Image 1 (cartoon, rainbow, N blue to C red):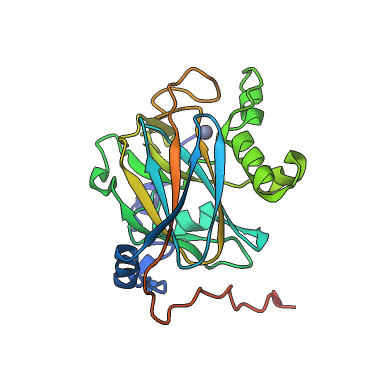
Image 2: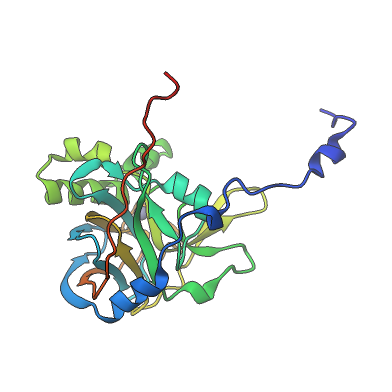
Length: 277
Ligand SMILES: [Zn+2]
């Protein structure tokens, strides 16, 4: 195939941002940070290696996701606690904030709700920035490792992929059966995971720079049910979907926020859903 005559000119057209995050309603980071200084620890649950844990986080509280024992990636699902249909929207979060998220970015819920579910208040891996491979930390690119893709690629059925861990975690949190819970499991925030795209546009991962004590601190904008899987890939330096990698637990700490003044949770989108009819 030959290029069209104006190929170079077409390639030279300058790009524009699809969305400019500075146009979004901005979080009051000063308020959140002062509420964190006055926060009180309420409980800790631990996602064991190759398994999931869930915790409820009331609006105005904080969820601190903490690396313990060793480098480990976590796959996070978020739900509105009173409505499993309102869940984290990885794709729109990516479109609004970029392929990886850090302090000041928000985790948005799916349509037709589209409101911030959580705001990232602290990220101890923010220093990592972008390495010379193009790798960054905390991605909203990947989906979650799952036994269906494993089977597609000719592997053995493996029941401790993040998808299955999240399914069991949600089932345990809600009383649903695994079959009922599974359709609610969605694309994740890959906490502590270091990923990017190679020159051919292929998705890569590399050993996470996370170390014990590192954390991602989320402010809960609404009442949340959080489910986190400690990925069987461990630090995701090589593979996943097997018991080969060294894995570690991840703690989920809930902290009740300090004084928030007259702050109130955001409303769901006010779009009237008429869709032109
Ligand atoms: Zn995984």
